[in-house]
Length: 260
Length: 250
Image 1 (cartoon, chains in turn green, purple):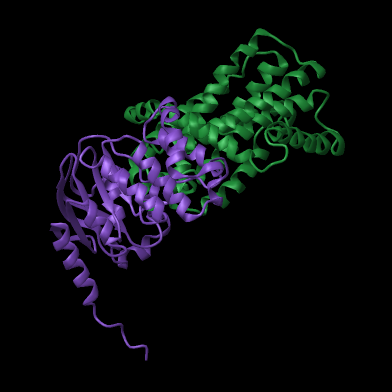
Image 2 (image 1 turned 180 degrees about the vertical axis):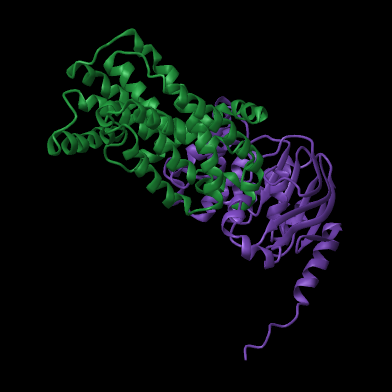
């Protein structure tokens, strides 16, 4: 498994190039090109602000930024997952022409997703001033949280890349799971608003490893307080999933080439 | 040098290989009576290609020629036997599927070059030669999906020949170009012959006879013959012609 990491690291130039090509290919033939990287999350934000803020009259004054910081992070995770399911089958030509570490394929999707996160963050910064977020030194936790999310996403995507190659139905299943996960995670709401019982809240945060992470993003960027302790649940789950993913992918890598 | 001993490559029949977890969960009852749907795309293949030698591979469609090249490129690991390769292997992009159709020819050259382990600077150094050789002109900056099959083949051949690897795998890309390009390609072949180890797959017996010093005839995944080009090609053609007549159409 360490061998797998070493192989990918050796081919980092290839990884980087595939990321660049993927971003280029996704924005080709579009009139607005890269502007969509900014427009996509903004329009999505608008939809939810209309839905929650105006129609349901909930959310409070800082709702747009609370929503936005969790939305871009959630989107990083889900877009990586969606890409990973078809990451091997969609690159059939490459996979059958040259030998290279296949883990580069799901990994490149994750990095492309991270750039979308960065574009989203660039939009978020001026919004933080408009909606008067509290800036504190706690924002320095950001790289740590991103790293936890990255590790967990890599693990999940490695597993989904293998299963998705064997089983095309996964593409349909995953869309449903992502939607369900969206409503079950504290994106449109915050845990403290929804669940009054402290024990229930605790149970929820332990059962949904992503919840601690999302609440921590809100804490450090907007509320100006340290991450919640439940981010540790996320970190632990991320590490376990990473190891499982790495093991599973390394074991099946060669079988994948023959399966497609 | 390429040394292949008792090589066997096995595929599972059916749509796709299932993971064991999947079989366990959904497929348990049916799996018991289902025959093991395996077939050997290659089996008991033995040969050696010396450094600087050009070896031709012939055989009917589906006889395992492309699979053999993929094994040598390291894409399929052997299920049986052993493959020893000394030197670096070029690319199989000529198979035509390797190009990313949405990207321009130029981007595809970079992609392919970096895939086979060149650095971006190294590709910078050879890209002009590739574009000129492939005679693509202004087409180099439009998406590959707009290319004719001849243009794709020329690009594939140009990349394979310019990548400067010790072992060059050529799969049926010389025959697709027009007469002028063929002549140029043949001149290029003559230039690298003796210097590089070449494995040449083709249905064009003239090409094989002209360049190969040895020919391997694959039939249904096993080696039907190996040896002098003239002799083996003769046997192969004879075997193909003396087929059973087609079944009655009723």
